[in-house]
Amino acid sequence: MESMWVFYNPDRKSSPIVHFFSWLVTIFMIFMVIFTIFSVKTSDKYGSSLAGYRLFVVLSDSMSPTDKNAELDIHFNAGDIVVTKDLTDEEKLTLKEGDIISFVSSNSDSYDKVLTHMIREVKYDSKGRVMGYTTYGTATGVDDEAMAKVDNVLGKYSYSIPKIGELFLFVKTPAGYLTCIFLPFVALICWYGIKIMRILRRM
Image (tube, rainbow, N blue to C red):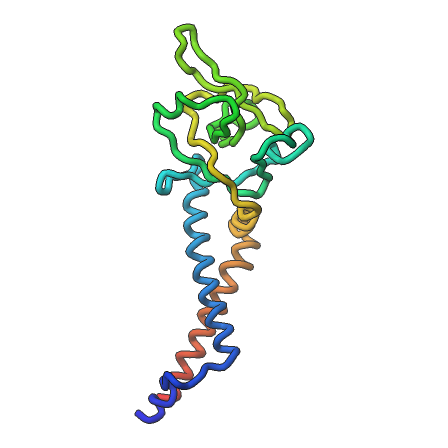
């Protein structure tokens, strides 16, 4: 019992190495939680909604800053994550020129993929009902081949998180999983195993 009291004495200060590893473990666990949330929310082709928002990894530079869009306030690059707000059917009909939306593309070169582009023009049918939107990537100013249909709109752009998408895309690769998940997890298990063995020896 005396040896246990010595080990668990609250007045006893931990070594800098133990303190460092404790913080390292905490950071790793936080990273794992965040990675799990982002992985689940970005693994779905069309993004799964979380509290009314969807996350998408940007895969092209169609909205990157260039001379063509220098006057605009919103830019994002390949590897960023864009966060879009879900819209009701009624809200989808109120979108206007200049809004940035995420939608399922009907373009031949990006069919069934999610694009996040700016609306250039609202398209109406002969009865004045909204059919969809002419969209474009602001980096080039070129209109998308196909109109973004109202039913294909997934949400309206809220904000972006720079470069985080690159990390999550890398972690999803075999090399990234080995480097960022598997090896740190094995090291964590070994470290806790050593701590448990020391506790048992002191007891």
